[in-house]
Length: 330
Image 1 (cartoon, helix red, strand yellow):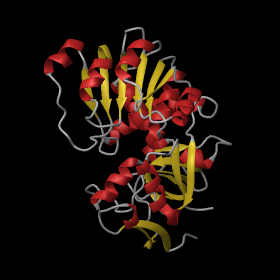
Image 2 (tube, helix red, strand yellow):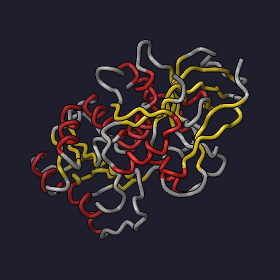
Image 3 (cartoon, rainbow, N blue to C red):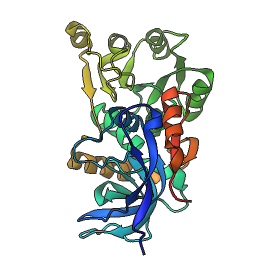
Image 4 (tube, helix red, strand yellow):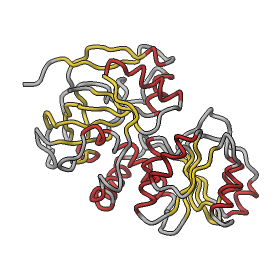
């Protein structure tokens, strides 16, 4: 028997982490093609922080933050054929993850492999789907090529390093301190550049013997626009995940043309369902069999649901290494 109400986190107004407050909400009911997940863990992502700062969700989405969860299927709606109550799953959700129960579409829900840690599973959907879409579907990274990851110790960055290593590509990453450098090297990066102390353009040229990065995964916004092009290999791709401070992308068009570069930007949450379904299909085929020893999220912190504000503060302080999780059910 499902409860009528649940604990959740709401954004009381736009602002800092302190605007996240515990609340009681009705337990949602799954509609056609949906599953209701009893949430064990929810991953915290920078997109959640952006929604909190704005104080409102994207049109049509729940006001409860949280884009990825793991847990157990509690109920299913009509036309659900892939899952049944009791199945262990993780899912990409359109908000609602910071709660004891959450709705997910069956098309973007993954089965958790037997024996796989439920906490780690909560860090798979958003990071894996974001990294795969940008590095492989947009960037078309191949074995033997070079990937430059800005922010390699983040959730998406650390997964991108592992995925590149899985397919035989080589990785350079930028980091902010020695602990993050060591973390990225342990994950398989060929080099980790401390951007506070070194010029990443010069270091990328050195590490790649002048070739440059074939794909650049950038989470820093526009601040590296010109320098990314300098670090890029001919015919390379720059894939942006964040607009940063919202500054205009300002580089000479001749610089883009000179490298025959492709400059891309994407938002996973705003992507169409068919795009998400194709990402899920490719991940199930090419990555899911390797979960565990070769591809897995790294845990930074696990906090109780009521301390979501502390999780946001830690993320925005940029001291975390790996994923920050909320425990929603014990």
